[in-house]
Length: 224
Ligand SMILES: O=C(O)CCC(=O)C(=O)O
Image 1 (cartoon, helix red, strand yellow):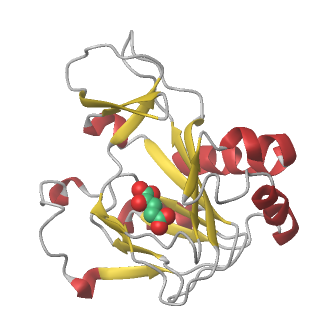
Image 2 (tube, helix red, strand yellow):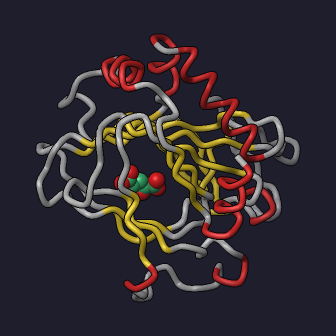
């Protein structure tokens, strides 16, 4: 665990192999509404996983707490579903928007929007640094089916001013390939992107965002 924490501190991400069994991953993957109704992904995803695999979800929550070294609450969850019929790409970005229960104007919080009925707002650095994302791989993910691409170390404060639209130095890019059951832990401010699959196969990832900090009143975290 200390090794993963050190990697997270240094690189902004760490791969934890074999965290959830392949059979539980299969149960979780089967819990979601079938495409094409929700092609590309499903927001508010935790309810589906909890209904069928509560023990695995609890194991992920506990893992987030150990990595953050503080009680962690799940505040958002998305199933990212890349497949031959929904073969999408995402440009380089940082995950700086957080889901909250209601809109309240608070200093340092800006760029309000709603996504499927949930308010999102850009959070200040002091909140983002107490957050962590766990990405549970429900399918194998290799160099050919759209693995996540990350810039190691780009979550650190000294890199945060860099314009995410500027050309990324490809020599610094790591490809996060993984097997079913592996969990990629990443800091929200890590610069990341995702290419279309060259050989489209199903690539489902349960992406859960955790926070180990309360928001300033009257803001409150949304339920995941
Ligand atoms: O799952 C992916 O490939 C991309 C996900 C993403 O862009 C994100 O986590 O913000």
